[in-house]
Length: 407
Ligand SMILES: Cc1ncc(COP(=O)(O)O)c(C=O)c1O
Image (cartoon, rainbow, N blue to C red):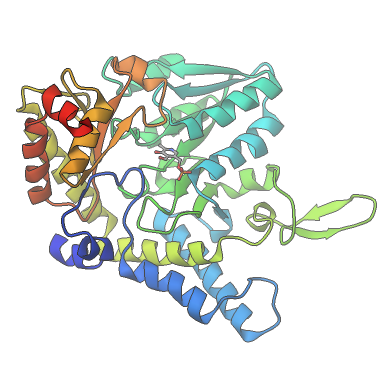
Protein backbone atom coordinates (compact mmCIF):
# COMPACT_ATOMS: atom_id res chain seq x y z
CA UNK A 1 0.00 0.00 0.00
CA UNK A 2 1.18 3.57 -0.75
CA UNK A 3 1.81 5.08 2.69
CA UNK A 4 2.82 8.73 2.29
CA UNK A 5 3.41 9.20 6.03
CA UNK A 6 5.96 6.37 6.00
CA UNK A 7 7.50 7.74 2.81
CA UNK A 8 7.94 11.18 4.39
CA UNK A 9 9.78 9.61 7.32
CA UNK A 10 12.39 8.38 4.82
CA UNK A 11 13.30 11.97 3.85
CA UNK A 12 15.36 13.92 6.43
CA UNK A 13 14.47 17.20 4.67
CA UNK A 14 10.97 16.95 6.15
CA UNK A 15 12.22 16.38 9.71
CA UNK A 16 14.74 19.22 9.33
CA UNK A 17 12.29 21.68 7.71
CA UNK A 18 8.95 20.93 9.37
CA UNK A 19 7.23 24.08 8.10
CA UNK A 20 8.30 23.83 4.49
CA UNK A 21 5.93 22.93 1.67
CA UNK A 22 8.23 21.84 -1.12
CA UNK A 23 6.52 22.12 -4.50
CA UNK A 24 9.65 22.32 -6.65
CA UNK A 25 10.48 18.68 -7.25
CA UNK A 26 10.60 19.18 -11.03
CA UNK A 27 13.73 21.24 -10.32
CA UNK A 28 15.20 18.66 -7.96
CA UNK A 29 13.73 16.10 -5.60
CA UNK A 30 14.47 15.42 -1.95
CA UNK A 31 16.62 12.37 -1.16
CA UNK A 32 15.65 9.47 1.12
CA UNK A 33 18.02 8.35 3.89
CA UNK A 34 18.89 5.23 1.90
CA UNK A 35 20.42 7.39 -0.85
CA UNK A 36 22.24 9.63 1.62
CA UNK A 37 23.61 6.49 3.34
CA UNK A 38 24.88 5.10 0.03
CA UNK A 39 26.77 8.33 -0.72
CA UNK A 40 28.11 8.58 2.86
CA UNK A 41 29.16 4.93 2.81
CA UNK A 42 31.30 5.65 -0.23
CA UNK A 43 32.95 8.64 1.46
CA UNK A 44 33.37 6.99 4.88
CA UNK A 45 34.20 3.41 4.00
CA UNK A 46 35.18 2.98 0.38
CA UNK A 47 36.63 6.09 -1.22
CA UNK A 48 38.54 4.54 -4.09
CA UNK A 49 38.56 4.84 -7.84
CA UNK A 50 36.85 2.19 -9.97
CA UNK A 51 38.06 -0.09 -12.77
CA UNK A 52 41.65 0.92 -11.95
CA UNK A 53 42.87 -0.43 -8.59
CA UNK A 54 44.37 -3.88 -7.99
CA UNK A 55 42.99 -4.24 -4.49
CA UNK A 56 39.81 -5.51 -2.85
CA UNK A 57 38.23 -2.13 -2.11
CA UNK A 58 38.50 -1.10 -5.74
CA UNK A 59 37.20 -4.48 -6.94
CA UNK A 60 34.21 -4.18 -4.61
CA UNK A 61 33.28 -0.61 -5.53
CA UNK A 62 33.75 -1.42 -9.24
CA UNK A 63 31.34 -4.33 -8.82
CA UNK A 64 28.73 -2.16 -7.08
CA UNK A 65 29.13 0.47 -9.82
CA UNK A 66 28.43 -2.18 -12.45
CA UNK A 67 25.51 -3.49 -10.40
CA UNK A 68 24.08 0.05 -10.62
CA UNK A 69 24.16 -0.30 -14.40
CA UNK A 70 22.12 -3.47 -14.10
CA UNK A 71 19.65 -1.74 -11.74
CA UNK A 72 19.27 1.10 -14.28
CA UNK A 73 18.70 -1.48 -17.03
CA UNK A 74 15.94 -3.04 -14.97
CA UNK A 75 14.46 0.35 -14.06
CA UNK A 76 13.84 1.27 -17.70
CA UNK A 77 13.65 -2.31 -19.03
CA UNK A 78 16.56 -2.00 -21.45
CA UNK A 79 17.66 -5.18 -23.19
CA UNK A 80 21.23 -5.06 -21.90
CA UNK A 81 23.18 -3.15 -19.27
CA UNK A 82 25.67 -2.33 -22.07
CA UNK A 83 23.01 0.12 -23.27
CA UNK A 84 23.30 2.17 -20.06
CA UNK A 85 25.85 5.01 -20.17
CA UNK A 86 26.39 6.95 -16.94
CA UNK A 87 26.60 10.70 -17.55
CA UNK A 88 26.52 13.83 -15.41
CA UNK A 89 22.78 14.23 -15.94
CA UNK A 90 20.08 14.59 -18.58
CA UNK A 91 21.74 17.64 -20.16
CA UNK A 92 25.04 15.86 -20.66
CA UNK A 93 23.22 12.75 -21.98
CA UNK A 94 21.28 14.86 -24.52
CA UNK A 95 24.46 16.64 -25.60
CA UNK A 96 26.14 13.26 -26.02
CA UNK A 97 23.46 12.11 -28.48
CA UNK A 98 23.47 15.40 -30.36
CA UNK A 99 27.24 15.52 -30.84
CA UNK A 100 27.92 11.78 -30.92
CA UNK A 101 25.09 10.84 -33.26
CA UNK A 102 23.59 14.00 -34.79
CA UNK A 103 26.83 15.70 -35.67
CA UNK A 104 28.25 12.48 -37.14
CA UNK A 105 25.30 11.35 -39.25
CA UNK A 106 23.21 14.40 -40.21
CA UNK A 107 23.76 16.38 -43.40
CA UNK A 108 22.37 19.55 -44.96
CA UNK A 109 19.53 17.48 -46.51
CA UNK A 110 18.28 16.30 -43.14
CA UNK A 111 15.70 17.58 -40.68
CA UNK A 112 15.64 17.43 -36.89
CA UNK A 113 12.01 17.45 -35.75
CA UNK A 114 11.24 18.76 -32.29
CA UNK A 115 8.53 20.75 -30.52
CA UNK A 116 8.13 24.21 -29.08
CA UNK A 117 7.72 22.73 -25.61
CA UNK A 118 11.33 21.59 -25.21
CA UNK A 119 13.63 22.42 -22.34
CA UNK A 120 16.83 24.21 -23.40
CA UNK A 121 18.83 21.02 -22.81
CA UNK A 122 16.90 19.20 -25.52
CA UNK A 123 16.95 21.91 -28.18
CA UNK A 124 20.13 23.99 -27.85
CA UNK A 125 22.46 21.04 -28.63
CA UNK A 126 20.39 20.43 -31.79
CA UNK A 127 20.69 24.12 -32.77
CA UNK A 128 24.46 23.57 -32.66
CA UNK A 129 24.20 20.36 -34.70
CA UNK A 130 22.11 22.23 -37.29
CA UNK A 131 24.69 25.01 -37.43
CA UNK A 132 27.57 22.58 -37.96
CA UNK A 133 25.90 20.09 -40.35
CA UNK A 134 23.50 22.39 -42.19
CA UNK A 135 20.54 20.23 -41.11
CA UNK A 136 17.27 22.09 -40.52
CA UNK A 137 15.19 22.22 -37.35
CA UNK A 138 11.43 21.90 -37.76
CA UNK A 139 8.78 22.07 -35.06
CA UNK A 140 5.67 19.98 -34.57
CA UNK A 141 2.87 22.51 -34.05
CA UNK A 142 1.28 22.27 -30.61
CA UNK A 143 -2.34 22.84 -29.66
CA UNK A 144 -3.00 26.37 -28.30
CA UNK A 145 -2.78 25.03 -24.72
CA UNK A 146 0.72 23.65 -25.47
CA UNK A 147 -0.37 20.01 -25.58
CA UNK A 148 0.85 17.49 -28.14
CA UNK A 149 -1.42 16.28 -30.93
CA UNK A 150 -0.44 13.03 -32.64
CA UNK A 151 -2.29 14.07 -35.82
CA UNK A 152 -0.18 17.23 -36.05
CA UNK A 153 2.91 15.08 -35.51
CA UNK A 154 1.88 12.77 -38.39
CA UNK A 155 1.48 15.81 -40.64
CA UNK A 156 4.89 17.17 -39.62
CA UNK A 157 6.71 13.88 -40.36
CA UNK A 158 8.30 13.40 -43.78
CA UNK A 159 11.12 11.42 -45.33
CA UNK A 160 13.69 14.18 -44.68
CA UNK A 161 13.30 13.83 -40.90
CA UNK A 162 16.23 11.88 -39.49
CA UNK A 163 15.88 12.71 -35.78
CA UNK A 164 12.74 13.25 -33.70
CA UNK A 165 13.67 14.71 -30.33
CA UNK A 166 10.99 15.24 -27.68
CA UNK A 167 10.51 15.38 -23.93
CA UNK A 168 8.12 12.63 -22.86
CA UNK A 169 6.83 14.99 -20.17
CA UNK A 170 7.00 18.77 -20.50
CA UNK A 171 8.66 20.37 -17.48
CA UNK A 172 6.16 23.25 -17.69
CA UNK A 173 2.85 21.60 -18.53
CA UNK A 174 3.19 18.00 -17.32
CA UNK A 175 1.52 16.48 -20.39
CA UNK A 176 2.63 12.91 -21.16
CA UNK A 177 3.48 12.22 -24.81
CA UNK A 178 2.57 8.86 -26.43
CA UNK A 179 6.18 7.80 -27.09
CA UNK A 180 5.27 4.34 -28.39
CA UNK A 181 3.04 5.76 -31.13
CA UNK A 182 5.58 8.50 -31.88
CA UNK A 183 8.40 5.95 -32.24
CA UNK A 184 6.32 3.73 -34.52
CA UNK A 185 5.53 6.61 -36.87
CA UNK A 186 9.10 8.03 -36.77
CA UNK A 187 10.60 4.60 -37.48
CA UNK A 188 8.30 4.12 -40.48
CA UNK A 189 10.16 7.12 -42.00
CA UNK A 190 13.57 5.83 -40.89
CA UNK A 191 14.07 8.51 -38.20
CA UNK A 192 15.59 7.85 -34.78
CA UNK A 193 13.74 8.95 -31.65
CA UNK A 194 15.52 10.78 -28.85
CA UNK A 195 13.45 11.01 -25.68
CA UNK A 196 14.22 13.56 -22.98
CA UNK A 197 13.08 11.63 -19.94
CA UNK A 198 14.20 14.15 -17.31
CA UNK A 199 10.59 14.66 -16.15
CA UNK A 200 9.09 11.32 -17.15
CA UNK A 201 11.48 8.70 -15.78
CA UNK A 202 11.10 9.92 -12.15
CA UNK A 203 7.29 9.86 -12.39
CA UNK A 204 6.01 7.18 -14.76
CA UNK A 205 6.95 3.57 -15.42
CA UNK A 206 9.48 3.52 -18.25
CA UNK A 207 9.87 0.62 -20.66
CA UNK A 208 12.26 1.41 -23.51
CA UNK A 209 11.64 -1.94 -25.20
CA UNK A 210 7.90 -1.42 -25.23
CA UNK A 211 8.04 2.19 -26.48
CA UNK A 212 10.93 1.26 -28.82
CA UNK A 213 12.56 4.69 -28.50
CA UNK A 214 16.20 4.82 -29.62
CA UNK A 215 17.70 7.10 -26.96
CA UNK A 216 16.54 8.15 -23.49
CA UNK A 217 18.17 10.73 -21.22
CA UNK A 218 17.46 11.28 -17.52
CA UNK A 219 18.95 12.77 -14.34
CA UNK A 220 19.44 11.18 -10.93
CA UNK A 221 18.66 14.29 -8.90
CA UNK A 222 15.04 14.53 -10.05
CA UNK A 223 14.29 10.95 -8.95
CA UNK A 224 15.53 10.88 -5.34
CA UNK A 225 19.16 10.42 -6.38
CA UNK A 226 22.23 12.65 -6.07
CA UNK A 227 22.99 15.49 -8.45
CA UNK A 228 25.88 15.19 -10.91
CA UNK A 229 24.75 11.84 -12.27
CA UNK A 230 22.39 10.71 -15.00
CA UNK A 231 21.91 8.14 -17.71
CA UNK A 232 21.91 7.94 -21.47
CA UNK A 233 20.15 4.83 -22.70
CA UNK A 234 20.75 3.98 -26.35
CA UNK A 235 20.01 0.91 -28.45
CA UNK A 236 23.32 -0.93 -28.56
CA UNK A 237 23.76 -0.79 -32.35
CA UNK A 238 23.31 3.00 -32.27
CA UNK A 239 25.70 3.49 -29.35
CA UNK A 240 28.22 1.30 -31.14
CA UNK A 241 28.26 3.48 -34.26
CA UNK A 242 28.15 6.77 -32.36
CA UNK A 243 31.15 9.00 -31.64
CA UNK A 244 32.35 9.56 -28.10
CA UNK A 245 32.75 13.32 -27.97
CA UNK A 246 34.72 13.10 -24.74
CA UNK A 247 37.95 11.11 -24.75
CA UNK A 248 40.27 10.21 -21.90
CA UNK A 249 41.26 7.60 -19.35
CA UNK A 250 39.09 4.53 -18.98
CA UNK A 251 37.33 4.83 -22.35
CA UNK A 252 40.17 3.64 -24.58
CA UNK A 253 41.58 0.13 -25.06
CA UNK A 254 44.89 1.49 -26.41
CA UNK A 255 46.50 4.46 -28.14
CA UNK A 256 49.93 5.08 -29.59
CA UNK A 257 52.40 7.84 -30.35
CA UNK A 258 51.00 8.30 -33.89
CA UNK A 259 47.59 9.29 -32.49
CA UNK A 260 45.81 6.00 -33.20
CA UNK A 261 43.10 5.40 -30.65
CA UNK A 262 41.15 2.22 -30.12
CA UNK A 263 38.10 2.92 -28.01
CA UNK A 264 36.42 0.33 -25.80
CA UNK A 265 32.94 -0.94 -26.67
CA UNK A 266 29.83 0.86 -25.31
CA UNK A 267 29.07 1.86 -22.65
CA UNK A 268 32.70 2.30 -21.58
CA UNK A 269 33.79 4.25 -24.65
CA UNK A 270 31.51 7.10 -23.45
CA UNK A 271 32.72 7.16 -19.84
CA UNK A 272 36.09 8.91 -20.10
CA UNK A 273 37.72 10.01 -16.86
CA UNK A 274 36.77 9.26 -13.28
CA UNK A 275 32.98 9.20 -13.13
CA UNK A 276 30.75 10.51 -10.35
CA UNK A 277 31.15 7.25 -8.41
CA UNK A 278 29.24 8.32 -5.30
CA UNK A 279 26.51 9.66 -7.59
CA UNK A 280 26.13 6.33 -9.36
CA UNK A 281 26.02 4.47 -6.04
CA UNK A 282 23.41 6.94 -4.77
CA UNK A 283 21.40 6.63 -7.98
CA UNK A 284 21.42 2.85 -7.57
CA UNK A 285 19.92 3.29 -4.08
CA UNK A 286 17.35 5.76 -5.47
CA UNK A 287 16.21 3.42 -8.23
CA UNK A 288 15.95 0.52 -5.76
CA UNK A 289 13.95 2.77 -3.44
CA UNK A 290 11.50 3.75 -6.21
CA UNK A 291 11.20 0.15 -7.44
CA UNK A 292 10.39 -1.00 -3.89
CA UNK A 293 7.53 1.51 -3.79
CA UNK A 294 6.56 0.59 -7.37
CA UNK A 295 6.59 3.09 -10.22
CA UNK A 296 2.91 2.30 -10.93
CA UNK A 297 2.15 3.51 -7.39
CA UNK A 298 4.30 6.63 -7.80
CA UNK A 299 2.49 7.42 -11.06
CA UNK A 300 -0.99 6.84 -9.61
CA UNK A 301 -0.22 9.00 -6.58
CA UNK A 302 1.17 11.78 -8.79
CA UNK A 303 -2.03 11.75 -10.82
CA UNK A 304 -4.15 11.92 -7.68
CA UNK A 305 -2.12 14.91 -6.40
CA UNK A 306 -2.16 16.83 -9.68
CA UNK A 307 -5.87 16.29 -10.26
CA UNK A 308 -6.60 17.42 -6.72
CA UNK A 309 -4.47 20.56 -7.01
CA UNK A 310 -5.81 21.41 -10.50
CA UNK A 311 -9.42 21.09 -9.36
CA UNK A 312 -8.76 23.38 -6.37
CA UNK A 313 -6.92 25.99 -8.47
CA UNK A 314 -9.72 25.99 -11.05
CA UNK A 315 -12.12 27.08 -8.30
CA UNK A 316 -10.08 30.22 -7.54
CA UNK A 317 -11.21 33.40 -9.37
CA UNK A 318 -7.74 35.01 -9.06
CA UNK A 319 -5.93 32.16 -10.84
CA UNK A 320 -5.23 31.40 -14.47
CA UNK A 321 -4.25 27.72 -14.78
CA UNK A 322 -2.43 26.85 -18.00
CA UNK A 323 -2.48 23.04 -17.81
CA UNK A 324 -5.76 21.83 -16.29
CA UNK A 325 -5.24 18.41 -17.94
CA UNK A 326 -1.72 17.86 -16.59
CA UNK A 327 -1.11 14.21 -15.79
CA UNK A 328 2.27 14.45 -14.16
CA UNK A 329 2.37 16.31 -10.82
CA UNK A 330 2.94 19.75 -12.39
CA UNK A 331 0.53 22.70 -12.17
CA UNK A 332 1.50 25.89 -13.99
CA UNK A 333 -0.46 29.06 -13.33
CA UNK A 334 -0.45 32.78 -12.72
CA UNK A 335 -2.20 34.96 -10.20
CA UNK A 336 -4.14 37.45 -12.33
CA UNK A 337 -2.49 40.86 -12.37
CA UNK A 338 0.54 39.72 -10.35
CA UNK A 339 4.04 39.12 -11.72
CA UNK A 340 4.91 35.43 -11.28
CA UNK A 341 8.12 36.05 -9.37
CA UNK A 342 6.39 38.40 -6.94
CA UNK A 343 3.75 35.78 -6.20
CA UNK A 344 6.45 33.12 -5.70
CA UNK A 345 8.34 35.47 -3.38
CA UNK A 346 5.15 36.03 -1.39
CA UNK A 347 4.62 32.26 -1.10
CA UNK A 348 8.18 31.97 0.17
CA UNK A 349 7.18 34.12 3.17
CA UNK A 350 4.65 31.37 3.93
CA UNK A 351 7.36 28.67 3.72
CA UNK A 352 6.18 27.46 0.34
CA UNK A 353 8.79 26.73 -2.33
CA UNK A 354 7.65 27.01 -5.97
CA UNK A 355 9.45 28.06 -9.12
CA UNK A 356 8.60 31.07 -11.24
CA UNK A 357 9.88 32.25 -14.62
CA UNK A 358 10.14 30.57 -18.01
CA UNK A 359 11.42 27.22 -16.70
CA UNK A 360 14.12 26.91 -19.41
CA UNK A 361 11.38 26.37 -22.04
CA UNK A 362 11.55 29.83 -23.53
CA UNK A 363 9.75 29.02 -26.80
CA UNK A 364 6.77 27.37 -25.12
CA UNK A 365 5.72 30.46 -23.25
CA UNK A 366 4.94 32.14 -26.58
CA UNK A 367 2.56 29.29 -27.34
CA UNK A 368 0.62 29.53 -24.08
CA UNK A 369 0.79 33.33 -24.12
CA UNK A 370 2.56 34.01 -20.83
CA UNK A 371 6.16 35.11 -20.53
CA UNK A 372 6.43 34.04 -16.88
CA UNK A 373 4.48 31.49 -14.87
CA UNK A 374 4.47 29.89 -11.44
CA UNK A 375 5.14 26.15 -11.41
CA UNK A 376 4.07 23.96 -8.50
CA UNK A 377 5.58 20.52 -8.95
CA UNK A 378 5.03 17.60 -6.60
CA UNK A 379 6.38 14.14 -5.96
CA UNK A 380 5.69 10.97 -4.03
CA UNK A 381 6.16 12.61 -0.62
CA UNK A 382 3.62 15.44 -1.05
CA UNK A 383 0.18 15.32 0.54
CA UNK A 384 -3.36 16.60 0.06
CA UNK A 385 -2.95 18.52 3.34
CA UNK A 386 -0.02 20.42 1.83
CA UNK A 387 -2.13 21.16 -1.24
CA UNK A 388 -4.94 22.52 0.97
CA UNK A 389 -2.48 24.82 2.79
CA UNK A 390 -0.97 25.89 -0.52
CA UNK A 391 -4.33 26.66 -2.13
CA UNK A 392 -5.41 28.67 0.94
CA UNK A 393 -2.33 30.87 0.56
CA UNK A 394 -2.63 31.18 -3.23
CA UNK A 395 -6.27 32.24 -2.90
CA UNK A 396 -5.20 35.24 -0.83
CA UNK A 397 -2.55 36.58 -3.19
CA UNK A 398 -3.18 39.97 -4.73
CA UNK A 399 -0.99 42.84 -5.82
CA UNK A 400 -1.11 44.60 -2.41
CA UNK A 401 0.11 41.49 -0.55
CA UNK A 402 3.00 41.05 -2.98
CA UNK A 403 4.02 44.71 -2.77
CA UNK A 404 4.03 44.28 1.02
CA UNK A 405 6.71 41.60 0.75
CA UNK A 406 9.15 44.07 -0.74
CA UNK A 407 8.49 46.95 1.70
C1 LIG B 1 12.47 18.44 -19.50
C2 LIG B 1 13.86 18.62 -18.99
N1 LIG B 1 14.88 18.25 -19.76
C3 LIG B 1 16.16 18.38 -19.39
C4 LIG B 1 16.47 18.92 -18.17
C5 LIG B 1 17.90 19.06 -17.77
O1 LIG B 1 18.18 18.26 -16.66
P1 LIG B 1 19.54 18.46 -15.83
O2 LIG B 1 19.57 19.91 -15.43
O3 LIG B 1 19.40 17.54 -14.68
O4 LIG B 1 20.65 18.10 -16.75
C6 LIG B 1 15.45 19.34 -17.32
C7 LIG B 1 15.75 19.99 -16.03
O5 LIG B 1 14.96 20.67 -15.44
C8 LIG B 1 14.11 19.17 -17.74
O6 LIG B 1 13.10 19.55 -16.97
